[in-house]
Length: 473
Image (cartoon, rainbow, N blue to C red; front, side, top):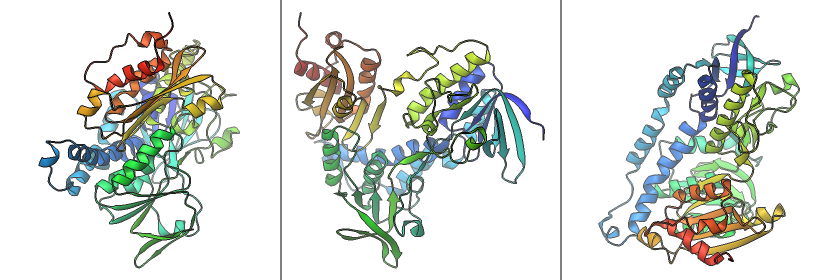
């Protein structure tokens, strides 16, 4: 069977694949996107957008109830049907028509079906009716297939058809009782969302909540979940799961928890097992090894971008990698060397030490770069400074209930910020300033001249610098 030649083939048309296509099309390369589900991917339909649409109303209601003068006007709880309708609107009712229009608008081609690598520079796409289209790439094949939910091997779990994040974010009824297994970002956010929608939520956490974050962030989020009515149980060992007439029984060392549904939120794995990597001598199933241009070492044509490479599995970081990869592909296709020095346009340098993340719980968590522990693990000599939000006027105006706290991790030798964590009101909008400080390697002494407006939550920066002390003359 002859293959149709194009410049770039991208397997996966989620936000990562779309961003690669945007860059390669801007460079004039003929680009084909291959997608077996919905164009726009996990983030648009089952993750970022629907989860935040579910979380937002509950967080706003909690904030209103904490603010004198507003609290007295609040009557009743959320309109669950209206919240679900709004969520449906944010997913475009699981229609990708608008995303398809965008793909066509940039001049890329969409091929529906399951794409698999079938040899060097070759991709076979199997459509819904079994027809096979063979494509060959002159410049690059990009694997941008994302990740899938990990389901642990717990006796009985497979038999009950547990929820993963997909079922939770697309649910059209709210279970009266929900058990959430896991303690990471997905677990905490969805436990928060369903508690606000009226579920009686139990969280079963093997170790601790938000284990990768600073201890004070973990503690405050755990307290916030419990204050919202979530039964958070840590150090739990699950032994068996079974569905009976009265619900799903999760058996632990401390007895049974009975609920209507069980949500498994114990992590995600790169979706690399069914993309044909073995046809080019690469073991399938794990994270795809790539350099900072997202090129797979030992090849001059194969790229792995986004969650599939396991470097920084976050949508915004995947899109960042996609922009770098697209520029690198375009440069190489034109016979040029990519701008691949650190912080160049063709590399994802920030993946290593400047990855921002927000957890949309109550309280909110925003972090970037190193924690004190991760810096110590890498042998970095650091100073750590902690302050609370109690003296920040903007936080008080936001209705902070003494949950707010912040930490900077400073490299002692270079006197620059290498990590920041904020917990409290409106901190999602603080993290980009910290990201800029880290990426720009701004000396702490210069940060004194970045004056926060009064009265804003950003004044926490001044309090952090005061706690550090003025630099010596």
